[in-house]
Length: 122
Ligand SMILES: [Zn+2]
Image (cartoon, rainbow, N blue to C red; front, side):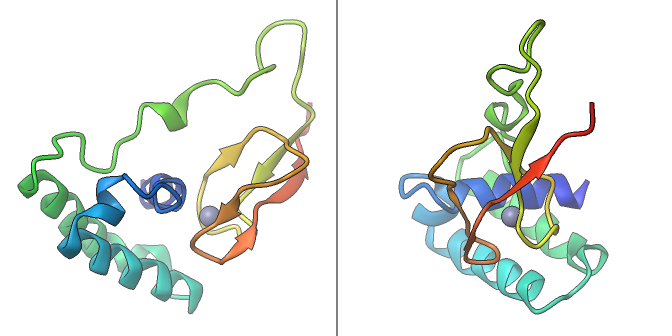
């Protein structure tokens, strides 16, 4: 659960207009959370912080909280006939974020590194 929330956070921190960046109280907490992940704090211990983050998003009027429909879209090419053999994953293995392979990988904002290529087992 928390890894999925972190995956959404990881992705949305990269978007300037996203409420996790645009809303002050939310952004400060979001950054505190990713800093602790970077420091190696186990995700289990951050569950309360994620709950607080969700509450602040809701309080600020973002009813979707940390859920992100977009992050659960199937990968392009993931459909029948065109199996995706490699994907980009969180470089620190902290979150469950996955992006389609790209020559220019998007950064993981949790670890401040480009996302890492990984092969899918088929
Ligand atoms: Zn990540």
